[in-house]
Image (cartoon, rainbow, N blue to C red; front, side, top):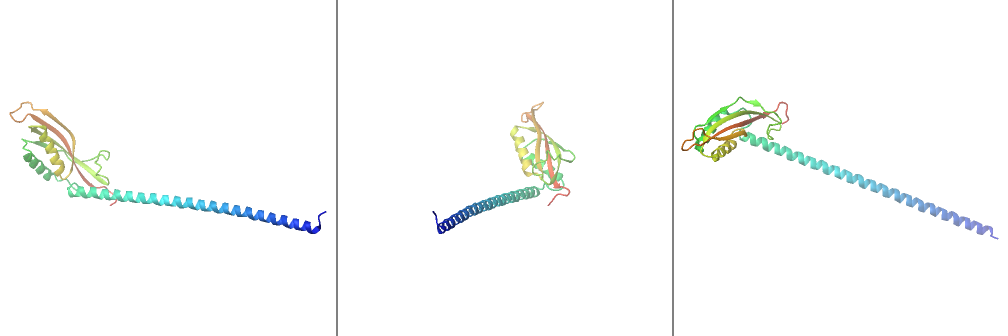
Length: 200
């Protein structure tokens, strides 16, 4: 038979084993909880970093867009396309270009200025209002290269954005020794002004 002391020692050992088991379980639970907290903190840090990177990329894209708009506006101002139409300068440009490209008599007429539909306004418009005057120009040609050279000249030197709407080249009704073709073109001469209420 077991003695009373033996029973007491066995009971104490059992209690010690139970206490150690409970302590081990608590340690496992604590370490699991800590690992979970660390994982969540890491995920929050990654999410915050991703959001910061997204915000930085957005700020850089906006900065690049603003810089591009400033460059476009500066380009339009430098070529004289922002403000009122400069028709007298346009007429002189057409006359000078006619002489440079050795063209015969050139008939031309500008229509009254009109606002442009935002859907067809050039990409340069952005926060500017675009208005256009249509030029109808008719001229004899020795060859089609003269027309291309004239259009390039006008587009490069005009104090406006010059856009070719339509152009046709036909045989002259009565061909002389030199002039055999006739060009008939419509060109939009587009100028800009800041929109009402647009930001600077």
